[in-house]
Image (tube, rainbow, N blue to C red):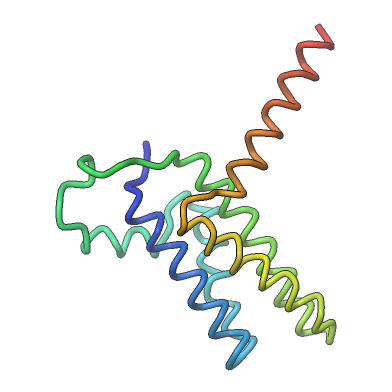
Length: 137
């Protein structure tokens, strides 16, 4: 099952805004997108996307679709980075916290503009696995 692009973009915007607010106001706010990421990965259902379905003006099937597996892969990356950032801030490694937070903001922000770094990473990984399997046979 695929996900309508506006809902994927809603999730990306949510991540950008909450991480940015966390960096500017209160680092503990990183827990919000982190916990939503954990819920998404555990249940395969993103609360932001589920809530956003009500905002669609047309039937979901009429929108350009995004690959669900790719979005879960991207969610893994973002959730891990936000977790590292939050733990880094807690432990006093402020620079590491900022680096991982800014990586999330940049990746989600660039995705909103049309380039998916997670897609590139997953594609290269899948090609590496394919070539490795092909040479092993």
